Length: 373
Image 1 (cartoon, helix red, strand yellow):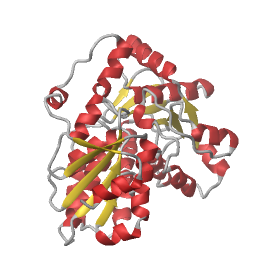
Image 2 (image 1 turned 60 degrees about the horizontal axis):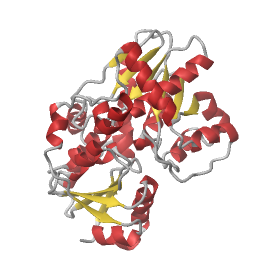
Image 3 (image 1 turned 180 degrees about the horizontal axis):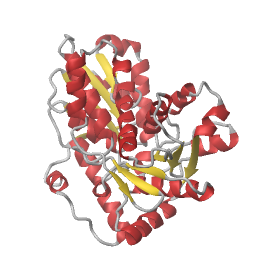
Image 4 (image 1 turned 45 degrees about the vertical axis):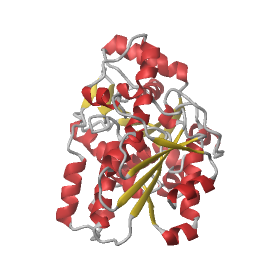
């Protein structure tokens, strides 16, 4: 992280921030001869966003000590970001967090993880989808009058401090990869494209990766782009892999920048597949039956995509990112498997808490009023 941080954080403080950010495991689990799972759900909210949110919140706490204004962190979430940001920023002095999430489009566990904190964490339930929430956040940052009145920043991947540390995953995977003379293909469940953007940047920095696969659900603006060269945003469609329900991924332009808008250069390094809910369900069931391994709906999309890539490119071996623990989607998983999951104590405790959120519409004025309270 040092090249990105420069001298803005002293080295000793940066090392302290990072050591606390990655104070849990990132195991690489072999499922079969060719495919491995990189588990990213061993952090405090059982999802991959714990690294980015943990790093960013600790950086923000470092800087808050030198700023005489309250910092307002504005974030839109399609699922896991909100909970990770809430956990990361809860109780940090001088920081207020405003979380927007689409009503009825996050799982029960995800909703409880972002609405039960109180104190400096404020959750707003938006009558719309994630793209609506993200558009409201972008409008706030374009509002110069609002910016004059408050110190406003974002914990979405709009803010590079949120996704830059996600490069760590890929280096942890390489540390555990035994066939150093055979670089892996890496499949990344992709919605807003911050995670795979971090991976591609890590590759540009020297990480040995053979190829990336952007694993998408039926929100397939990027798979279509790689087929047609035409980037056409769509209205987000609801799926079982709800955190990836994004019709206009804001980080894809950053990927284009990394590759200097050279289509062929990007296509040589990254493929993309669209996986249906039916394929997601069959993948979860098949992997459980074959390997006694339980995928969450997002990891299942990642597995299905890398399996397709390897079938089309025999002899390759690869890794998919298992981005969240299956219990985060307990209702969905119960419907798929026909039986309830065993909930770990950290999730059982959530169900004893009370949801506390405010409902707003998709109009920017609703958000502006909330910010100025």
